[in-house]
Length: 264
Image (cartoon, rainbow, N blue to C red; front, side, top):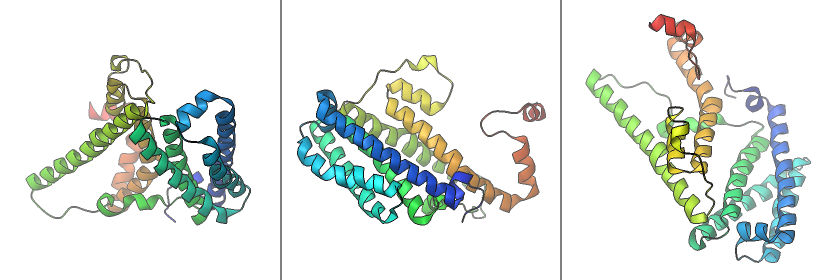
């Protein structure tokens, strides 16, 4: 069990409650959506496109709505029904929306449901969220090999370039393409309104993509909730009291007056 995680992620009982709550909300949302599909033409057209709602519903209601409700009721083995089905439907809807340009909202909703189902399913299966899995492979914490200062600076800038290119250019570009192809764009105010707030949020408003805004917010939440506690634990183990003094004096999101005076 990785220490220093927020209580809702580290406590078995609390984490399981959150997982079951998610599946309860997913079952409720799915039931309301299917009610809308058969009663509101706009809902059917924007979320299913040209797909036959009867055929889709025959499979989706028991495997998605009812299975999620039963998982929420305490039947944990049914996560092996609800989660794989949600991921399968998401892949199908994303492919359908990308090829036809229809049912974009359905693809978007199912994409969010797949992420939530995977996270909640892992929590219910393991009793916790294994955030340490985010720090495997190229993302693991490790000390740099002894080398010259110039070489270390070069490696640092290379890592920054790869990180920024992937997370601030390529992934937002894919999101923007999907948003336009699926027809789920929403008008946003100009970037000048919030210029200087955050680089990625500013870029999101510049391209007029509310999905990139959500991506930026979600990325910040994931870093702050899952990665930062583990990173700080690693730094505390490496540098001890020196890092603890630094952590007490430096704010994470907002500057502190003591830190500003110290730097003056």
